[in-house]
Image: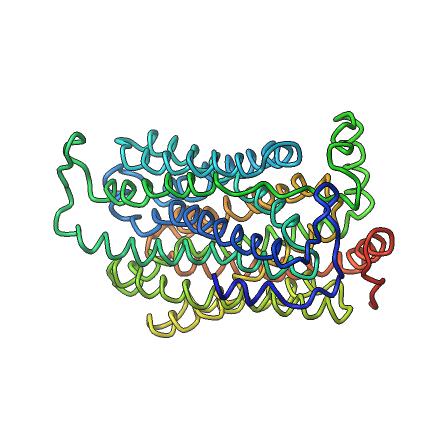
Length: 475
């Protein structure tokens, strides 16, 4: 919490904005302190979403053997079914976040995905596990659009990238904990593949892991419900007046806005989604170390988890800090510019890591991969929120996880699995499938991020001139 406070209380280069309804300055110590507290709660909730989502990647072997499935079927559990419903539900939930209480949307989502994680532990067949993962995706689709919208009202533009960088740390906290905790749990119960639980009877060890990580999320949901809903600020116009517009008129305005800055949105959504495809390929890294170099799930989980918990947040914090600094100096396209550089930075280790001759070199290459993996969850949402009218923030914010989910969350795990099963036809060729898929996607990602820089600068400066005390910045 103290680290978040230090990061978010820097000088406000944008000046103080007044809340449209409450009249309180967003730069006041009281509002900043509460924003920091709310950010910490949202970070914990976000951590649990990735803990519940990613814990399954350590249990590929036991689940495939228990349910008699192949890698491509398992990829549906980690990417396909989960990713599609996670992203599709994000759109209506983003629309709802622009009109309803965001904290209650997020609270309901946390409760739902926690129950669905428990449901994964109770599943007795592939179909049941698939349905539980779909429910998990529906629940998790609520948090990001609601949290983005809340954070954009808790903080002004100069602090927003830093706030998002700390919120985004929940990704690596959750993934890291899933690797470390999952590795320890799996190691502890490896000698007892079947466990007897009161009232539930005999259960496989992988089912017990889901129960252990799912139940605490219900406590997090209760905590989240105690947050104060932030006042919506819409450039001095009460948000209720904005919401009185007919839905058809508002949709037309949104489509006009997207069409006017089409290349900017290609970079933000297509570039961010392709970047996510590279990043979510790491769902196979625990199994890569197990299949290729003979590590145990415990070894794999501890090493990958430790690097995820340390290096990943460093990349996020650096991205938030450095982009805020560049924006303060007038480089308003800093978020998108850094995303393009990050795409190059993550591609090289993504290609080389699976081809490493030994696990030590692979674990070393994992460090830069994790560092650059932390860029887009901070930079893309910050770029979207800083160039979007308040009344569209929930919807435009939801488009980011939507495109990320359709392309990144879904195909990040599926593409290597398809190459493994149908091109190489050898489970031990997973390393070549990972390297090939990342080598194909990386250069396209960089080009997609770079194509919209000019329109991004134009949009930012036009909005700044009309609505903000920030002067138009240099190109």
